[in-house]
Amino acid sequence: MAVLAIVLSSSNSLIEAPAASLPETASVTHVIDGDSYVAHFADGLDRGVRLIGVNAPELTDERENVRYWAFLAKRFATHHLEGRKVKLEYDWNKLDKYGRVLAYVRLRGGELFNELILGRGFAAIFLKYPFRKDYQEAFRSAQQEAVRRGRGLWGKEPPPEIGLSEVRSRLGEYIAVRFICAWVMDGESYIFVSPASGELQVLISKESGLLLSPAVQFKNKEIAVAGLLEKGKRQPRIYVLFQRQLSVWKF
Image (cartoon, rainbow, N blue to C red; front, side, top):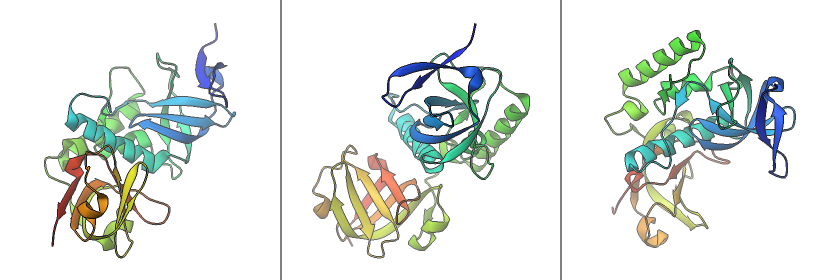
């Protein structure tokens, strides 16, 4: 009996395709969370993908601290994966119980994303289900290094603070930046905040609980923002969803 994968057609209707025929390349179209994505495969089908050996925090967890790290794990995955072509490697089990493709995901430069997200401390190794021994060893080593260096989930200190001149060289890192807010724009879903130099854009979600008028709250104030430093269209950006990510002072 053939094993079948659940996929999405262009009309978003569910169809089935043999798991044995899964292509080895895909483009990530949407990041769901730190360990789950939707990708457009080389055969023209969209499929859910789940990282092998990785367990990221859950966005729906009742504990705020867990949701915070789940948010950062998603931003880390978005920075590295969304809109990018990846190479997929498979193990003896190609699907999980939800019909998602189980995969090791390699970035364009050859780096294994499963190992990368563990090494940066945005997820923990997941050993409930067996997978290839060499990757188990590599993933354990990556997590041990994250723990030793106090990265991400394993950190006890606030993120390091950098200057605006450093932001372009620190993409993909969990950091804090301090600057004087010169520009504020009130968008539909986000409040956009930037320094006069335009070297950074901060996108503050309107779900963050920061409810005052954007101009009153941020314009001409000193701001310290913590988060995942990502590549934007024109300048690096940081997304803010939690109040703990942002501090504002008068000067």
